[in-house]
Length: 371
Image: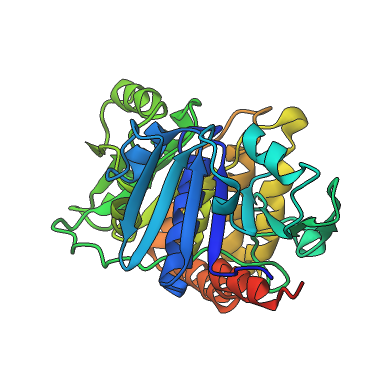
């Protein structure tokens, strides 16, 4: 019999904060959905976990952690647990594999207990997410079962992770607030697009002001340098690195978002705010396939003429084989400040929410297991 109230989540941190960000978010959402769960999180980089959740002690290989009414066990990746401490439900996030000690235990000849491994895959809007969701996969032993669980943007996937988020503090200024978080690339077109947007708006509203809130990280230095070289044309605020709950609340107080990667994409999409997504660069410009797949999911939420500058800038911004131009960004920002683009993003967010919470779908699947 499976003990469905005990779940292990595996996280091998590859890109500092993206992987652990999703895992921490998933653990929170699971605990919010069912407070009696006993979660064990095996994480390869506790320093990264600490940055997102300051109560985590990066120096402790094994530690308890209190999340609301739930008690978690957090262990370092290589810290071996006893066989009776290994839950029968294991979430393997992003095909991260399993620690050597866990692999040896599960596939030892004398380990006969049934274990269900659920691979929580990367987020994509591509059609294969629908096709792979709940697809079974073989392992080396009949009692060690594996299945794919796909996040996604349709009701044929597991959906996105929802979290409870406190309302942001009311903005004290009347500025148009833009959040900027990107990979370490040339931001010249972004700076020029925002500069021209503010200039155009001031022709209609003399005191119109833009403030760009620049996220901590490698992308901040190139952005600040380009901004200075352009004559510091708008206001800038440099942000400290924020714990996850604080970040979630902060971005909801913005007017427009630039985000990168998977976790920030999901957060932006759920806010209903206008946003630009920068996908991780891949060989042969394959990231454009992912960008275009998401654009196709979004298109029905917009008036065709309003969506064209959004589509055009997203494609250009993510095409690493050609120079990014600023005109479509200026048009996109102008549409959004006029409210036209905002309605489309809000409608897309409503459709995503209608698909339901990935954590709740995951618990429903676990409840359905019978072996």
